[in-house]
Length: 282
Image (spheres, rainbow, N blue to C red):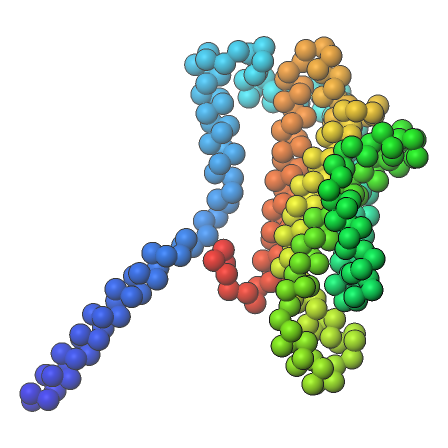
């Protein structure tokens, strides 16, 4: 009887020792992901903006109320101005993004898998990175004219640099023991790339992809305000000349929504593709 009692006491003491450890581990993690949590911040900003406008603490000439911006957006959409400019901006950003994405991945693979490629490519990309991309606009206008080609080329440069840098860094960080294991197993070059290189490079690739998506919108808004006759940036530039701050806010909100949605799509794809990882954000 005394043995059973001592065993029960020992088990209870063991459980009591483990409970604090479990609780301590839970306190260290950020906890479960909340649904649509990323919308909480923007919605809070919108609520504060609406409250300040209703209280009359904002200058309506400089920062119109949200409902004024909403009415202006509906008017621009109804008269056909906004759909045309949005479609034009989407085409420019999409074309530049596809070219930049392809260039970034190809250059990162060529540089990361070959010492000759690294010698030829990495230093050139680092040099390009040190030059402000928007500073290339005058030179590109001389080379390519003021049409769509130079705008797409600038957006492609803005996109390819972060994709190259992060993908190349991930490739360089692949553990050499995996390479030795692939050599011992006699993997072909294709299987080595498919089974070792791509899984090892994907986390860095997605970081670069998110930066590239955001960069495409940042480059677009600048380009369309410098030299364009259509697009959201042109709409905002014209509104500046006429003092229409509500139209400017419509353009900024659309850029913000596009950036948030595209980043969310990349994050969703990243979670699906890298579902095998167990990280702090999982």
